[in-house]
Image (tube, rainbow, N blue to C red; front, side):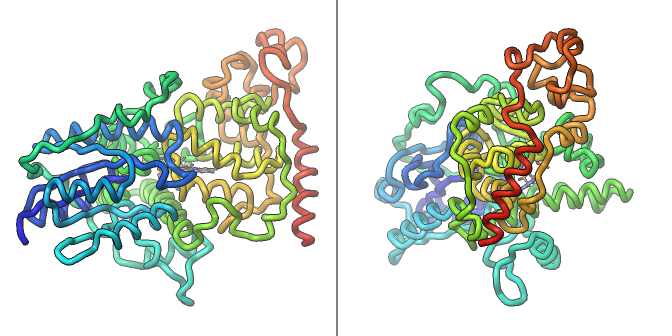
Length: 482
Ligand SMILES: Cc1cc2nc3c(=O)[nH]c(=O)nc-3n(C[C@H](O)[C@H](O)[C@H](O)COP(=O)(O)OP(=O)(O)OC[C@H]3O[C@@H](n4cnc5c(N)ncnc54)[C@H](O)[C@@H]3O)c2cc1C
């Protein structure tokens, strides 16, 4: 039957641009009902954390605003998803429900249940790919198995046809005549009761238009230096697209084509290799989703079984020092404070703090993953799981466990002037560059000149690097033997 309404169920695709489910709904010809349903219990323990909820609130406000500009609005509901969709079907006579896929294991199971429950004669239920360049089940090795090594995975992706072209945002959206009941985003109580989000608020603008502008500015001003600057937290070396990608304010296809077009139009090997390096990072995101889809247990358990018996330590005091940025290692503490303040942390620093937690402190990677989950605005089950398993040496293509980052040398290498550390740890900011990453080596005159009282204004290291390294290697030997 023609011209009956289509429900478009928004999830992690909170945008109008390049939204295949929305486009397909418009193409059906009838009214379109955009709906968001808040149902955290259905995502079990991986429902959005505190920073993620903050982002989600603002995403819903922004999406509603965008929809109103084109003659529609967002219907917001909460509670059991299937019940809500069925209710909307009854209220509106909709005969189609469309959405873009998610890949989190619990969400996929829930979606399958909903699909089965809705599917009956006369009802069209369709899911689309709105958040990946390639579907994870389409990329397999020669034996028809999923990949565990990134290089081979990405080579295979690049040998395929280019990802589908992104579609443009609609300029109008036919709405149903009936007034539908809807909550306001604030009714979902996603914002913190005690406002700890001032730093996040002043760092981010949650809006799809802004995401594209930010990416354009990055391409214009920084992309040519990406390869050399991407490991430098003291520079604007990366695009900061991760929360927009996670929540869907921008699609990876849109990014791919914005970059690919520049590669076509611009000459110069430096620019081209930087642009390819950037696309490769999008490849890591694809790889993370590939692993999440094929090895769903890895959100909780190591991919490499041997690590199940790793002699982890339970040390609440050390965990708390790490979470609060009070380990006494400036590079680690700066990262953890950047995370707390802005809801984001530079990739190189994520690697350093993660390595410190699992190797220096021997604390299970799952504890770190949980903290990141609660505090990152880009908390993403696929990327977070990959990042933590990589750091702990127990995942696909991971950093070997015996390679232990030294937070001091990492600091001098990637924050050579100490600007990053000074931004987040002002209490040691007056130390000279040569001491900024290891204040405990300063003599008492230098400390006094800089106004630093170790153990009082800034902590002494909670563990000695050489001892920690030995302890970690000994622990590793134990599982290696087994
Ligand atoms: C322990 C740990 C935990 C992490 N947790 C998350 C997480 O929860 N959410 C998240 O989005 N990323 C996570 N990452 C990956 C990475 O740190 C961020 O994606 C990156 O810092 C985002 O910054 P950007 O957008 O400026 O990156 P850019 O360098 O500009 O890269 C562009 C995009 O490529 C993707 N990308 C880049 N690096 C990686 C990577 N190593 N793995 C997967 N995708 C990547 C991201 O989507 C990113 O937005 C984690 C990394 C580690 C080591």
